[in-house]
Length: 447
Image (cartoon, rainbow, N blue to C red; front, side):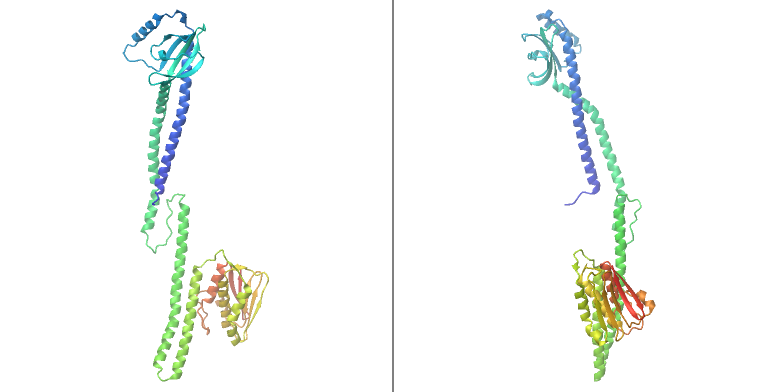
């Protein structure tokens, strides 16, 4: 289901909120106004009843009612019907009605009490509020009543007079709010249009000018992401270019050896020598591809929280056994030294095995005959040294660069081993340093 836009949702929520506030205000105003109207008319009825209680009702005769009715009719000059919201009646102590207003009061039912009561009057049985007061001479009951519906009508009229202007103001405020909201969202529309119009290779930062303060953190985070993506793409392009360059040489050499095999004819020695070189070239290309794949995976890998407990003795022993034959061929000794509390206890066993494999492979390859390789696992570092190494001091700082191999090297390699070592160490939060002193090459890994 498609969600509404943020602008429409804000408008909708504001409209609901404003309507709810308007209704709540109306209910509150109605309650307060009704209370004040009831209080006002109750006071009015009570005053009128008290005034009537002071009259001399003993002098009232049957003809008095007729005379009063006649006077009221004569006062009605315009012929319109008088307001029927008020009624009055006078009863003697026996409950006999001796006087009324000839309108509503004649329907009052006798109620020998003092104070306010409610009665349903007329054919429609509308509720009336009636106040009862004893006459001064205690011989009569004065009843002054008012229709409750009339009070409600007065309260509604007052509320309409108060709320209708406010309703117009609310409508105007909503229109102004919607217009301002549309104006404030205009930069976001422009931003979306600019991003849509971008080319796929355009990773330049997004211009954050005129961007609302609330959206600015999102834009800055997006720009940081674009910078990381651009940096990653540059590394990948460089990696692909370097890989293609490094693969070109062994593939060309393989083609040359294959051509030699084809033209060797009956020369068995030439053919056998070419096949030997071809086999070595294939092995070298295979190792190069393997190293390239390993480095590519490492560049995209992140260490997860579910690391393994590292068994350093097993990792180091396994790597040493892999190099044992090559080391014996060059009369190279490999010694190890462990500590009970290594500098790192958790990580990924496969990656550290790969790291040791590359370090020991380099140490055996680039050390002279009769050299000594020492592996020391301490509480604060991992140190690997190998003697009888010939390396120019200016090349030390370039170690770890992809495909870097010092000039004059006779040992075959890809120049990726130390790059892989640095990447694995970095994934585990460690740093690698290289040094050379008195023909002893040292690699130190620290957290």
